[in-house]
Length: 396
Image (cartoon, rainbow, N blue to C red; front, side):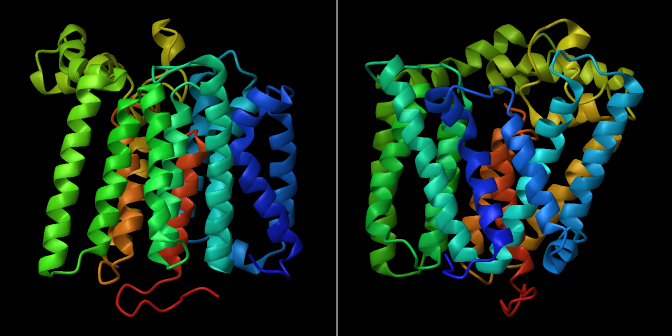
């Protein structure tokens, strides 16, 4: 981090830190402000501070940010039109589901452009703090490696895995000693196994695969190394399947899918208990194809009590063709710009982060959670500061 950091960057760093750690911090230590009004106030301060920055004003006009701003405006206006049927106060729903993730993405992108290493070190620290707080939750709620819940739920492992992503990015920039990566991965894996969250485990594997690809240099030694790592990974995966709760859940996925799949489409059975959301969500989409039923309204629409556990069906069912189109445009920009930078080996690490989110989207909604928008912000910052061919900086 710069010693002479600007006032706005100091505010931005505090905002990013608290946006990441607030929920476990509030649940384990502070025990105050359960509705998050402190984050709301800090977000307003952060936004007002950065409105004087030419770089920020230039950044929010770039295509990925603009697309998501339009998505947010559509989502908010659509709720006014189709109706708001959620118990959470409207202003808090709008803030936490639309405005906060958008601001997190923009501020992370801004700070990546200003000082990428400083930003990445902050993210490493923030997700490390999150991991420590989660370990406190695990220690106080469980004595062994078994599924634990608590206030954090599945969001604990789905946040913690991004510590691995940040470490991979730092190491790719030669700012983290690769010898310590196994220790980080062990701690992250412990949390994932404790919560038995299948999608977090597979997303972590995806990140690891893309990081490893970024390090590949064709030689006999590298081929032997790849074989050893592959064998070790296979044996570890077999152990997880045989000896842990998450392994049992992975093995039961198909069986759960068959029970919840009455559509006649066998392919949906691989989604396990999430097949229900695909089937019912698609039915609702056909009734409301243009604008959907409004983001967050699924549970009240069916009197089901749960939100859709699939970002893709969320966009289709609750956002209709308009929301889905904007969502596809946003992800297309990210994928296209990363692929165009494949001449830079580091691009594979960023692609691993994005691909892990695209996988998580199959069985979770992601548009309202900050960790994914931290990753988006890092990816956008990388794409806006590198040239597809010559890897030159584009924004000062």
